[in-house]
Image 1 (cartoon, rainbow, N blue to C red):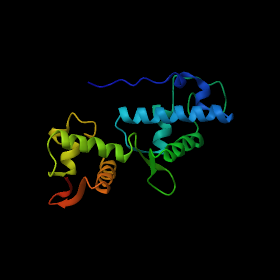
Image 2 (cartoon, helix red, strand yellow):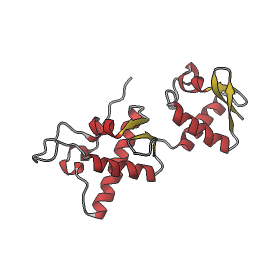
Image 3 (cartoon, rainbow, N blue to C red):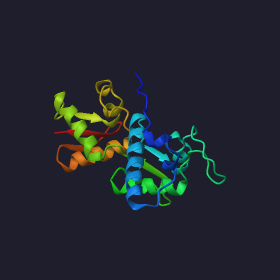
Image 4 (cartoon, helix red, strand yellow):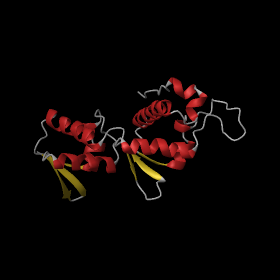
Length: 184
């Protein structure tokens, strides 16, 4: 059953696609954009993209809005403003740049520690402590199909397991077909 995405009211409001100069208004607007990006990526299980992909995606591009201006496309947040929103997400710990040019990024609608907590709760709930799993089993195995971390990309999974390793709840190991993890 696919969930439908409900756009916030601001998404239908043309000024939302122009970063506002007033500091208070801008902070509220950036918070709304950050919330929208995280909700959208969470629903679509999207964990990485390029700035170019972001600019063309429905996320920053509401084609239903008609802007009556010669130099602005309808309901499209300019790339400079997208960079500001993405940088705000980075400051909050929800985004990591994947290159020095800041052209591609990893989006974390949950921080690695939160993913680690969810994974560890499943391990404990299902009585799997002291068990070894491949990364594939965790994100693609039948046992995890109903879990939110099922389908999680490997980069985010490794960050979550590293967080658990720091808490001495798991150890990332090498297994015959790649990497795995042992839970304590």
